[in-house]
Length: 427
Ligand SMILES: Cc1ncc(COP(=O)(O)O)c(C=O)c1O
Image (tube, rainbow, N blue to C red; front, side, top):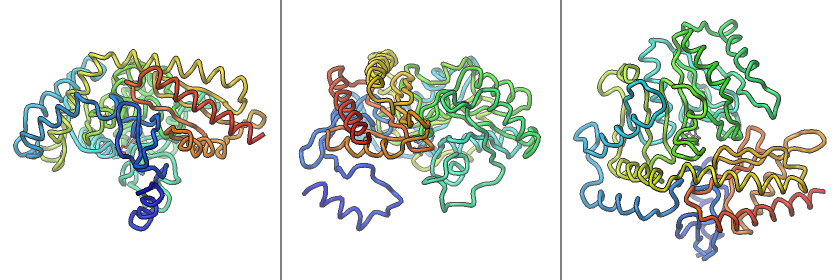
């Protein structure tokens, strides 16, 4: 069977709304390598969208999950729980930034974590409004689509969304949006759209993910914290893409010098096993009635044991330091490349959450075509890459944090060649 044959079969039975970036079908994967069913080998700079931070088919995680499978795979944590469910909550509440006592709940997907953070915030405050940011991404369920600040493809045709959601601009030095402008826009919302006493929460990503890998400045996060404190609003940090050592800290909020009231976690939490969490201040988390939060598969035992192993690996292998090292290597290589490729408008590396934004050097306009061409050339060059950005002009690099340095270097050789070729073809 070939990739093309399977892709043809896929198009017959899978709706197009569930897009596929690459027509390659995976046979196996190991650390930062992926092999397709034709035996082609790729270097993976996507890690399943920032999920396998601990590498593909990590032996320690596989062993932990296999042992759990031999005991039991499901009892429902809300019916008859198990030790790993409590142990993972103990660890995450300890790791979450800030001194206030925390509590956790577990769910299955990132979007569900965000939904539940909003539920908790509404239950705690008795208010309904939520402020989110333009360019933000929070998921594909109805509430999280409403919170997401990008129309195509995430919201187009799917409305109506829940009401009482408002969007403010996210600060972005590269595109000329200052911290003051962003904070002022929230004040404007309070003046024009909703009084602050009806706002339950402000939700933000410490580094916007799908939006283009823009990091929140400290002054912005601290401004949000002050606004929230002043008006009794809860601050939710969506750490679904940024968490678990990706940015060189366990959580990207640690760069900001604030304590959020609630945090959402998923993706890297369990190396690919579907589990997510909301961790927040204990008095806030306890606001919902027993049974109001959770789900049949929420906090699956397979996810819990995988999550416990992920945390051990992050600590023992110092993956935060590894993420910083990866970011430095990539930044140096791409900065050098920028000398010969003027379409590289900006290189952003927050640990190993790394992006290259393509803009026309003369007009400053986003270069979507160049981005698309780089993505599509990646497969034939044995590289898996992702794009992002509200204007779809950003390449994001998210290799496993366990990537060997020579594999990283080999992947960057490929990336440099691809960008150079595409850039030369465009001239
Ligand atoms: C910041 C952020 N929030 C929420 C989500 C939604 O997570 P999931 O796709 O697991 O529902 C994502 C996924 O990319 C994300 O990056």
